[in-house]
Amino acid sequence: MAELRYGDDDPEPSDPFPVGPLYVPVRPGPSGCAARLFRTPLGDRTAVGFTSASRLTATLGAGQAWIRLAEPALRALTAPLGITTVTVDPRLTAPAPTPVTALTAVTSGFPVSRTA
Image (cartoon, rainbow, N blue to C red; front, side, top):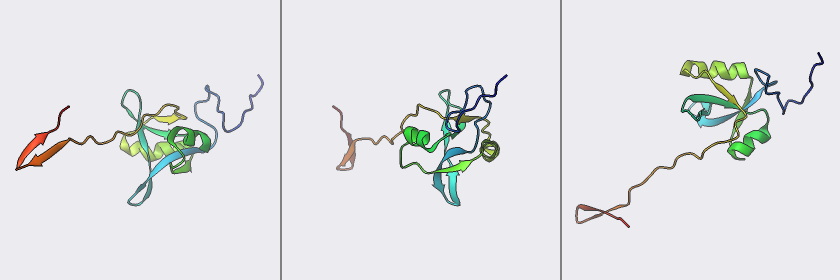
């Protein structure tokens, strides 16, 4: 059987783990940076990694900070949090929820709601 060759940017779907380190999105934290955690469509928490910086940028935007981590290191980092899933190269993301503010005005000590 011939061994299939492909670049680091294009892992085969049959591979259990991608080849090489992943580009892991991070956010600033009190002790440096922390891996961003996401939710699956069913609501379970998951760690996310991308096989290339261009895939990360296409999904999360140019302003997203990242670090390189091997997949076992990412699993070890998130295991104490009870996260057992690593999602590689997700293509669909939803925007972060924005806080909903109530449109109320206080007049003469009585709250008044604005309704259309």
